[in-house]
Image (cartoon, rainbow, N blue to C red; front, side):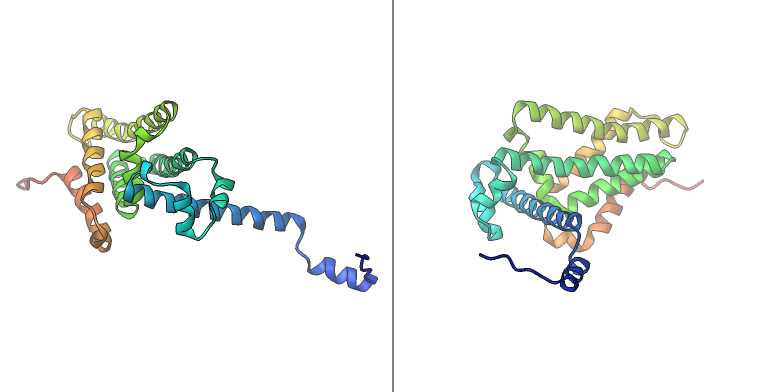
Length: 223
């Protein structure tokens, strides 16, 4: 095919209106990122509903209207896709906990914020939390070890808040590790009973958990 030749004015107009190559590359990168996240979210929902072993990659693809090869472009296997789900959840938990730890100096306020953040995420993303706490055995041994390391790191942020609160007298002299385990254990069990009908009351649920752990359920007589 012969090459079309433009005059100088046409070329100048085209160069002015055309987006730079770097901008095109950024748009493509953003599109790939959005598609990847869409696949991860779809997989998390299916894994939570049916279990990891019962879901095939082509089912994840068909749910989104994609071909199986489209999913394979982003993830080489179902194991890689499952790992991406775990990375998304752990990244949110640890990232938010670290942000709170750095921005809230008072340990009582910090623990309150940590509990509220944890409960809200579980309530708003039940399917993600279900996969994270139920399906760790579906990962390879090495990745299971990595997830447990992440959990230890996350729990330590809660323990640190309790430890500081005990030290400065703002909290009762309780063992930080037991308090952290009790708080997170009670919060995590929420994935077994929360349902769509609770979505309108997420703030109320978070308030309830905060009140239970920070104030207790026994009404103390005022001095």
